[in-house]
Image (cartoon, rainbow, N blue to C red; front, side, top):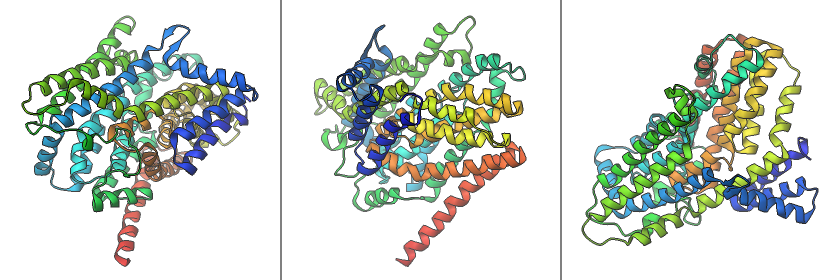
Length: 519
């Protein structure tokens, strides 16, 4: 079953059930079971052992405790605790009151997460969670649905980090390029120089970022997003009241202190940002070989440990500020309990996503898709377009951008050298673009899960409402790669990609406005 078309079955089953049932836990669980059965030729006992092996491996492996995963899981609990503290202290309420005075329109409120998403480019995980914490009080006050907030978070985090050299993603990619060039005998580029040249060949990243701002400025609601936005505006329900969210219902459950100030929200967030970035640089400095630079520090940083350190200090700061408040307060134990409970949906989905990711890796879904690219016989000019599409499918099926980078960047370089060495950078840039595209479509993507968590949205609602916007950006990127195949001009290809996004968004806006007038 491995490395054959049958390796697609677990991903197809999981994605099909997501679309049919909208129940993510059921869909992930079914995909895990089907994958385990395929790996062991439907031997029940061996399949059950496989499921236990991938579950236990999340926490403990032959080398000891899986500290990396544990750091992230504990950080999510810490994030829940920080959120409870910011609500209970009255910090979120005070920030919302400030926003009403200084942010005058619903459009401006939607621009807050969009702009923050661009400014916080150091790491996608940190972006997903920090932007949600800061922007949520603002967007809530202006009745912006949580699904739309999750879209803003998700569609700026990965696209900005994948084109930023000084980011965990940029450093990871640059770290891959050096050995890759040496293996393929490519001497025309240095890794950093190559990454910078690849930036403007990443059509999807620019298309997604542009569309975020068009959506915020012109209030473009496509497909299921219209339902969420209409409900938020008309009823004040920012999420479907019949569905669970990734951050629980903390606002309704938490007793709010009337003496809270903006500092009770802002200071923990600043502590979280400063200590996390500081820890990223510190862990990278000690892990980097020889003379550490900014790039090598980000290349070798321990992101999950850094998030854990930042979360601990931010939570401690929040407790100290809350303890100094006068008036009625919740007990520390109750805050911890509520914070941990609020993160249960996110943790449950993340664990199952890791499990199906391990199953998909064992059955080698990525290897099968990669082999299609290696066997492809086509006009060399269309190679970036083909790789963009195949990489998108791979990231969709596996739910990982970084894993897709690791598989597809070497293949893109190898195939390009065979066809036309001038296409090495365009082909590798299309890998980066396709990975983010597929990641945005995938319900098992870490960044999608954490974007839902940061926004406090229902996860499947986020995936389904984001999908139409993703398809617009992807379709525009396909046009851009076609133009590149015909002309070889990077600038014109990117301009036409952005033009297609803008034209589609504005035409949809005009159609929607005319349709509403006729009703």
